[in-house]
Image (tube, rainbow, N blue to C red; front, top):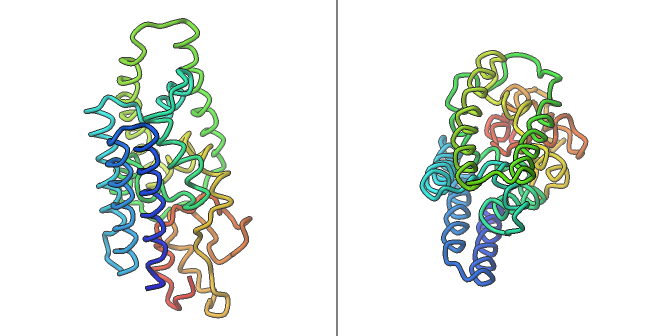
Length: 272
């Protein structure tokens, strides 16, 4: 049963958040929301351990579609980074603010970039494209993410600074238009760079939060040096160009690991 510690711990973490938010905010929605997401992620991790082929993709669809369609389009919540800035400016700790705190700011201290691998609704679509493993060397244009990060912040600040009316409606449409742009740019980059995850590596503003926290992640893929034969298979299948054989926190692209477990599944010596 030791191999199921991670899915159980993940479920317990989300369930704890669900109960705390339910009791402190007196809104049962939080109990349902985080219980659903935690259960979906824990189920996916369990199926991954059981070596079920589409376990991670199942979680992406369960969580990604829930957040995109139900929370975003039906409930009119902007779950993109603009929604986070919006709630910060209004001084309200709910919706996107709680989502970012749990999944993208403090959560990565426990599960690193797991959000990117199991829940992101942008990557959910991009992972269906044909370039699951990068076909070309990584580009040195990751600085673009800081531009998109800054633009999103300045956009929301400008709305408050100029006292624009109907901000909530603008937030909804910025979520819709933002997602369309994300998908369009992501698909174009995937084919241009022959890499499904090019958007994640170079454009996504969320990684500005994720990367520094992921450096200290509790759950990490590690290499048993005694079993490793340096065949390079793990590097060949990694969608994020991580040198997973280096156990130090300074390993190449270490904060990019999305815990997809492709390296673990493909290691011929079970060294990971």
